[in-house]
Figure 1 (cartoon, helix red, strand yellow):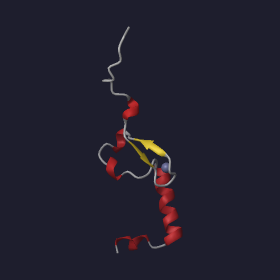
Figure 2 (cartoon, rainbow, N blue to C red):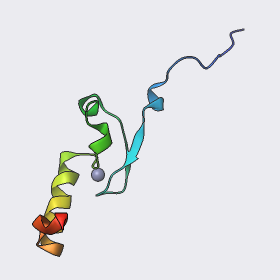
Figure 3 (cartoon, rainbow, N blue to C red):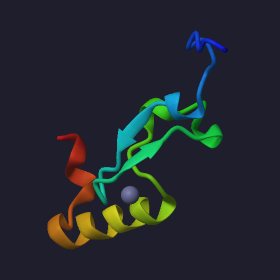
Amino acid sequence: MRSNKGSVIKKTDLPEKICAQCRRPFSWRKKWERCWQEVRFCSDRCKRDAKTKNQCAAASVEDEFI
Ligand SMILES: [Zn+2]
């Protein structure tokens, strides 16, 4: 019989976030290893959709830094 010590790193142990656009959880990816803290969207599509939405709703994205 083998015993599982739990020392093996599973792929499912990757950090997760909730996408600010589609509200679905997504996991860490290699391409985000340098900017994971800043990642807010699960995909470029969500990023684009969020931008479009903001422009429609609030038309003044540039006023963000008031
Ligand atoms: Zn998303």
